[in-house]
Length: 146
Length: 116
Image (cartoon, rainbow over all chains, first blue to last red; front, side, top):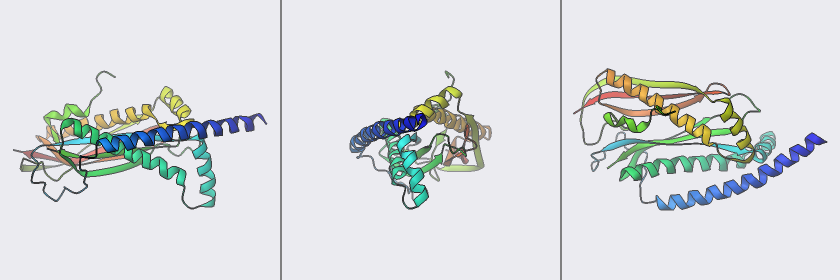
């Protein structure tokens, strides 16, 4: 009975704190995306010459985002029934937007006119342990040019 | 953590993800260079991450750890490149793999070149 109580408390904490943090993060992302919208980001540039550029620098943005207790629990059930695991879809989407924004903000500070040949990379942090943390690392990197 | 390598120390060497360096021409290709590091998260960070995992959101400890590690891998790649007499590395790619629950390998590779 006691373990069940703890479990429900954790689920509730995960649900309320988790959705609060997610909401705040999404609002923050929206805001910062609006502020960095003037910087074009493209993922060509390796073979296509960029004629107007004469300076270049590497920019990396990375973030580790983790799931909350509620999401992990729900995803476990969704995994059982199959189909889309929507709780994790929003998680990696947040991470990807955050990583991209960190790269763009760095590039803007340097004075880049655009970021070319951008790559996104995702790595799972949890390892093989099923009881470990559920987290993904997402990095975005590209070349800022002036 | 005072002497941690940062990506900004790379001013001596130009790094790009392109096939060339804008504004310069490549004089000579010197071959593939790589740098890697395997990092373990420490107990304190693991504990904090475990707590943070209840409510979700960014795990700042891990983000910093991986950024430091990636900077170190980049530093190693740059050392290898400058040993060969390169002044730039082009077409850089990053890769991450988590070996076990406690450790992650950060890997970066590119082509060392000499530019004018």
